[in-house]
Amino acid sequence: MVSSPSAPVQRERILITVLTYPHPSESYDELVCTAGITARGEWVRLYPIDYRYRPRDQQFRKFQWIEVDLEARGAGNDNRKESRRPKLDSIRVIAAPLSVDDDWRARRDIIDPLPHSTVGELEASYERDRTSLGIVRPSRIDDLVVEPADRAWKGSWQDVQNQLRLFDAQPKKLEKLPFKWSYIFTCPDRAEPYKRMIEDWEIGALFLNLRETHGEERAAQMVREHYLSRVAAPTRDVRFFMGTRFPYNTWVIVGVFWPPIKRQLDLGLS
Image 1 (tube, rainbow, N blue to C red):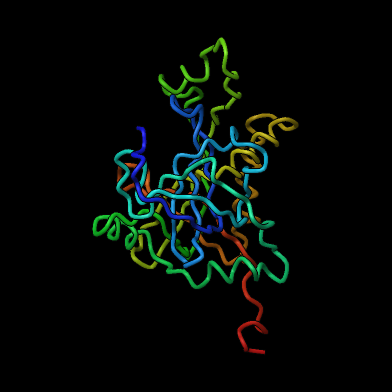
Image 2: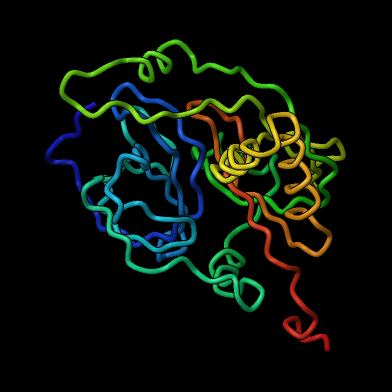
C-alpha cells in the first residue's frame, strides 16, 4: 500500500527491544517485526522494516537507540494501538547498545518502570483498545518445549525466495527454521499454565549457529537448554516481551528480558 503524501509524520527516538525472526515479503523481500520503547516510555511497533536489506549504518541492534520518522498509524489495515509505519530511509542509529554492566542497570532503568501484566490482562486490553505489545513477568517457568515446524515457507513466501530477477539484486537466502520453541509458564491470573511460542530473532540465530557443528536435533535441544537453564535460571528476573499476531488477539513471546535478580543492596535490605 502506498502511503499518502499528506500523512502526518513525527520524528521519534526509540530504544529497540524486539526483533523477530524474518519472514519473506512480496513487497519488501523480507520483513522483521520490530518494536521498542519511545523516549516517553511508550511501546511502538515499527512495521514494515526490511532489516537485512537496510544499509549497514541502519542495521540497529537490540537495546540501541535510534531516531526514525513515523506515520501516525500502522501500514495498511494494521489498527493496533502501537503500530506505526516507518520512513525507512530516515532511520538513524544514535547510540551504542545499552550495557549489561552493573546487573543490567541501564536496561532495567527503561524496562522496570513500564507496566507489567498477565497474559489474561493483555488479551483483555487488546479487546478494549487494540493494545498489542506488553510485558509479562511469569510467576513460574515450568518448561520449554521443542516441536517440529514446517520446513518450507507458505506458498507465496516460497515464491519470493525462488524468484530470479533480471536487473535487481537477488533475494538473500532466508532459511525456514525446522523447529519451534515455546515456554510453558504460569501467571497469577490462572492456575493453568500458558504455552507461548518464542519468535525472537536470537533464538533462530542461536539454532542456526549451533547446527553448524552439532547437527539439527542436538542444536534444537541445546537451544532448549540455553533458554531453560541459563535464560530462565533461578537467579534471573525473567520478563517476556509479548505481542500479537496480526490481525488476531493471539499473543506470542517476541523477546525475552533476563537480567539478574536485584541484589539486596539495590533493594535497601542490606
